[in-house]
Image 1 (cartoon, rainbow, N blue to C red):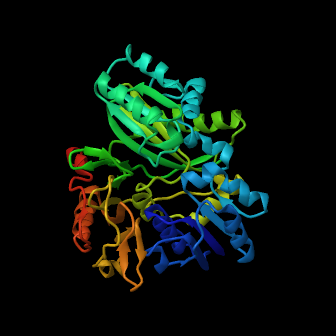
Image 2: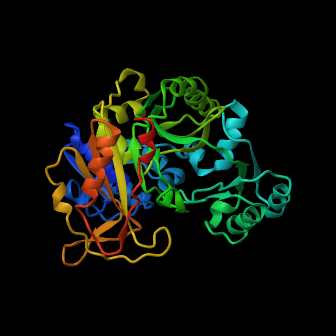
Length: 425
């Protein structure tokens, strides 16, 4: 098979690795890719939102399968653009990708179909939002309804903070048009767990659970980021939690989308909060999570191509999805200053240590090659160092050991990824 992967981050590097493990994949392209992906795929300089160029490339190069797991192109209709030209693509059509593209839509969906989530109100008028806050209990959560690169969520402890947050989102347009409409919801407490599922419109198959660390600093301090590290599986995702979610959340969500005339195909990401009153949906995403993918896919035994094809064909119930009985931990190495301003172009050394390793991965998230052919930083989250182990403690020790193998000026990382597992193992 000839396969085209759309994207250029750490998630795409992990997907590329999984595709490369499939004996069905003979040729792998990636648009636009990065310095790490370039080692296992042919990178082509096409932007992820240039649907005309992408479809033309797929047609001209006789691509058998295109894979996209990025929110912006999915919500903008990349799947529809490919299918309109008779091209085969794994991803979510735009009318179903709205489940991530509009938090207002997803909250209304959960309310309508009785899917457990936080109580909320939705506003498109900042003055009405401010008036509502006067009667609300604190702390409270503000969410930009549109796509905001995983950062459009504000946790406000006081009324003053909440009012300021409305100003940032709706009036100052900190996240652009994503804040034209906002969701104000109750603050929930508990463990967060991410569960990814393949879906074909009617059926779903769960991947292994994982947990992300969003805050920039140790001890969950600092600003929200796109993710500073993950571990899989989550020991907090118990059999009881799994049974509850299967009864009240997973299939109910797929059925709700089908009832709305928006059958969901692709990867459906369930962000869950394990509250004292049971699991609640924090958010949906229409894609592989980042960096959750970096700990989930290295543990996947099944051929990812078979699973993706089944999602497209509506035959997901006929394939098995199997994961190794092990664990994985990913530590993100970021540029100093992230998620604020940071410098680019720093030379990265030590990457060769990951060559010919079976239990260690270095997924490139923000890298490129400079004019000298050196791998340099080009983003805030630069590398995702992932290691496997027989259990989470071993995987965590391996990940932090491997994180010492690479270096660039100004780098930083959290030192407590997966520390919560110590209380249960």
